[in-house]
Length: 328
Image (tube, rainbow, N blue to C red; front, side, top):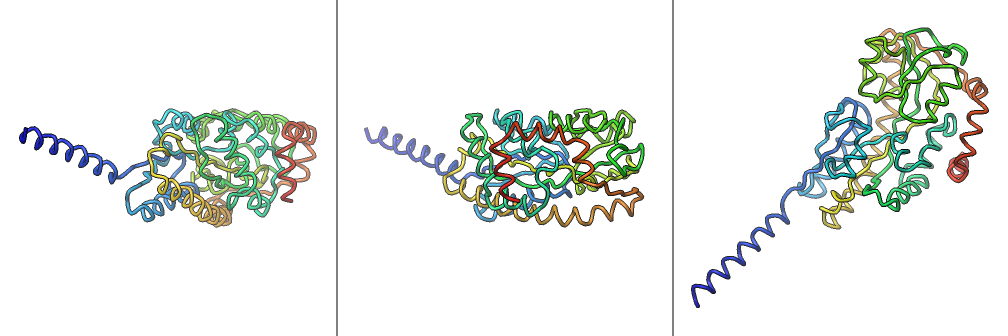
């Protein structure tokens, strides 16, 4: 009887020991991003990882995979749903596959300044709250931790300098897989080709496309001057990026750890916005120094050239457009 009691106590101790070890084990979260570690979103993820490790005393770590090494950006949200990826930096255009009315943010010239963007997204602003709730309520196994900034998008190409909307006609350019992006460039007479950003540089090298459009800091960070000669400052739309997390990955954390992850995501988001704007300011000069011919295109002329298209798009998202216009 005494031997059995000793064995039972030993078994209980072993179970408790295993439980305590697992309770204190480090949780490593894998985060995917599709550009170099120097771009603002990558810097934001690195800052978030640093804050999380500090605040959780090393109990939670975020391991950042840049340059698409965790897969294609278009797959991040799906992989988070499946639980094969914990965190993905997912552009707003890609997120429309899951939450269609995020497409409203893609409408060109709807958000026209950083001040408006901050009112809408920064510090858990009204649009961040709106979309976070939509994602949570959709039952798609995803959680939106925050909305960060890619910035205002510009246009580069290897065909000609762009001075007027008419100069864009006939140019084949890479766009995201978004009906709004495709429709906008088609309305300007261009030939938009949906393609992941990770494939764009090679496509430019091989002359499969003539140009691309993206935030200026991303163009500079990806050395677009090596494959494109002309840069047009079109500011044609504001681009945000959703910091998406797998719901099942979040549930692996304690309530306290979950709160730390949420708080630090927003703290890192503030840092990321500042970094994006710092890089955006420097990027134009950098690309000009690297030999690109930089032109500015009249925004009102661009809007006038696609007025019917813009009106049609705004009519599809009346509630979101109302929120955005209230920030002006």
